[in-house]
Image 1 (cartoon, rainbow over the protein chains, first blue to last red):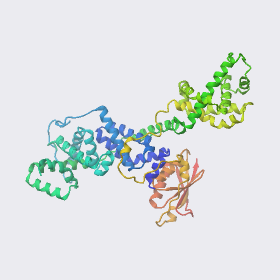
Image 2: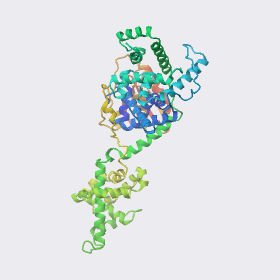
Image 3: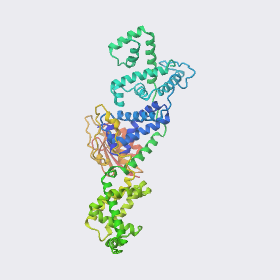
Image 4: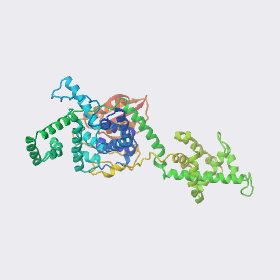
Length: 186
Length: 357
């Protein structure tokens, strides 16, 4: 029995410390997923807490048909999508992304970036996140899972509970949409 | 091959998952189409930027805030869950007891005010309650208790039938203070058990049922809010899972942690064991013994260590490698002061003696 499985069994039997140990294994990933989905640290913390409360309450319904990480991500995805649907907030114009009104193009970082190049890269990433935030949540999710957190197509299909083909087409469309949103500003 | 196909295939091309045939076709097109070449290069740069995003740490205090919420959920769960959840056996007992109290209260009032032929003051039940009165409780409460003990012992159909009606009343009249404090309820119910015990009129059945009374008395409190945070909450998302199980846990039939740990089978290992390095005894000095064994078990589980044996003040763990040994010592040091007692002659085990300072 792996350590995680053992902790899971203990948590399901009511051990809060065991659950807290499980949280420590996933909190950073889930927080970053929520952060990329919302582009807000406050919202990301709230949502991450909601995710783990939901996980804790639902532990007994987890049958082990998929990996625990996949299950937790699925809960995170559903909570983020729910949140988005409730507030319908911060949908920015793709043609005029926030903070880039001057239309200044940002240079790409080189392989071995100087401090100035690093700063430019951070600025580009910030701009990209704003553009991602303007995508519809389904596209946002696949971009984050695939291109930021590097999950495989198969893992994303498991997390979202959709066929592999759907994941491929979503990723392709999401990238095209993001590319168009970014325009010539990168 | 056209420019729209480029957009369709570009993602998989950059991911390296496009088939060789399509890859050749796409690259041939890129050689002749500057627009598509720019599109693919821009996309590559965008993906590179996304991939280079660093993970951020959760904000300071995140874990503390989460733990507070988890503890709050757990408190509700302990109070509302398990046998106390709707349909649980203690709820049924509680309903039965509440019904009995309501019924006997009615009988008592009828008796006192002439409903049963005007024998006011001559009821045998009324006599017994006078004898059973105890400090801090008025005679009316005492009457209800001793009478309910007798009736619940008889377990009449009428009492059971009346249970459903009396539950709603119990909900309405529930004292909010007692809802917030299960311990307070237990204190009260402990007194409840005293009444029939002192009663000279108690019968065998009521004595037999007495141990059930404390939990039964808590049932109305449980009912007042048992519709939320039940442990059986389902996750509809999981129903759509389409992957194989990964050694997942089965539904636990032994929910008590301590029981589970005691039944844990020792792990055997094929690797060579350095007894001198991974066998020993130590004292763990702590200030607060609450949940200490559970905390030790969590440290063990988090490092793949199995609990071999547990007694009142010792926990014996199977430690099979240096990494586990180091992690165990580091974890125990966070719980309290660790005193190494030296090497044990037992193979690959570490025995922890828990000492409360």
